[in-house]
Length: 81
Image 1 (cartoon, one colour):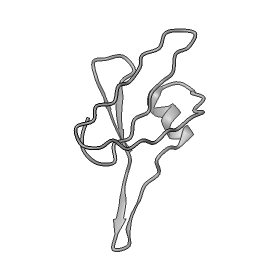
Image 2 (cartoon, one colour):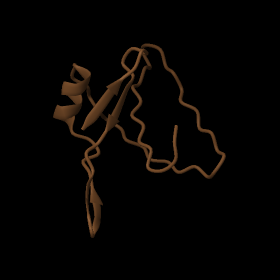
Image 3 (tube, helix red, strand yellow):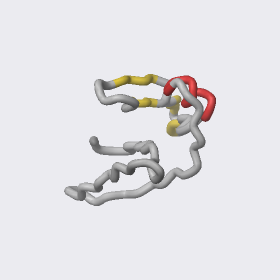
């Protein structure tokens, strides 16, 4: 797993190790122990959503303040952010 930090507090780019062969590929999308270690604290990961957007669609991320805050885990299968 490759982790890149940014100037924005708590923002990290987490890139999984992808194991590729003639059959296709495999990667571990989430591992609680590794994730906690990389971000430096224990989290309670309770929800994972997946969406698909057509070309030229922009989806928004919503910032939430206490007591309704939520961390965001984003996975890009194809394309770019």
